[in-house]
Image (cartoon, helix red, strand yellow):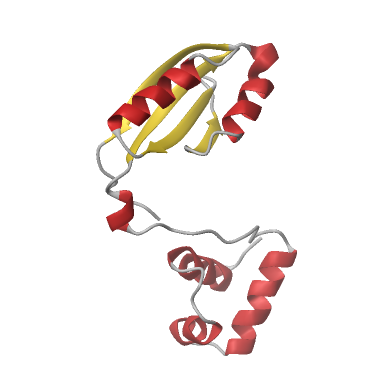
Length: 142
């Protein structure tokens, strides 16, 4: 379990995972040693599994993003997932309940590229149907 101090540290790291220990300590009102030991403990416990790159809004505004809802045959859903993992335009893959089995979040440099990607995913062996929604804007991104 994480406590309030850990959650505050995690929130700051989500905003900027490259923030210095000194900057994090100043914002949290604790020592650098405390911040470093909390980060190490969170990493050891597997709460922090890694760090990633957050792209700038200027770069991202040129990408076309979409949610693709996928229904896959149950016996081959693992194979569909394996193929999706190898497609670089796939940003996230969620297993969901309901009428669809997966939600695939993708990004492409153009509408034409997105169209090709959606067709590619729809044509995968074991994919029964897809439903796509293009993301027009992001209102909250935490």
